[in-house]
Image 1 (tube, rainbow, N blue to C red):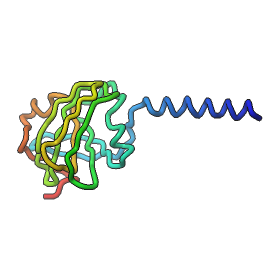
Image 2 (image 1 turned 45 degrees about the vertical axis):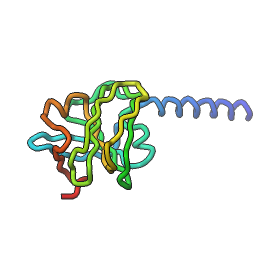
Image 3 (image 1 turned 120 degrees about the vertical axis):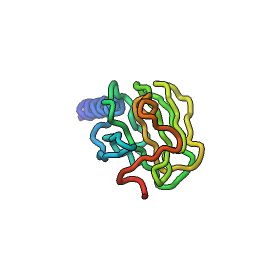
Image 4 (image 1 turned 180 degrees about the vertical axis):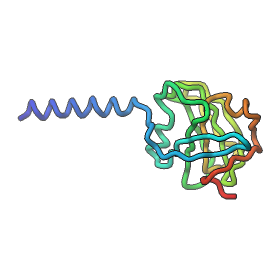
Length: 147
């Protein structure tokens, strides 16, 4: 009986360790727009979903990203621990206006913060915003943002 318990415990530990090292790819998705540009983004809205974010992903299609949704506006800070892709974070106000952008280097613990309180952070592949001519003051549209 003791041996069976230890075997089950070891199997559970191994499964938990593997689950912590895998990307989350089954989050709800929404469409966002920036002018004529469309994005297909996953929505991370729970504390667990937000803490994992885009960690452990080896690749992400160009038009995809992740929208982090917080309950209340506050200064949001992000880092890139266990994140393999270079990303740009857009810190976004409730009306969809980009407050500021931050390019983030993979696998670092450098802090990248909004310049004012926001409820939304949109992460896309690094360079996506620049290639589309989007910067602070540009506006995003979609179901998440109030008109």
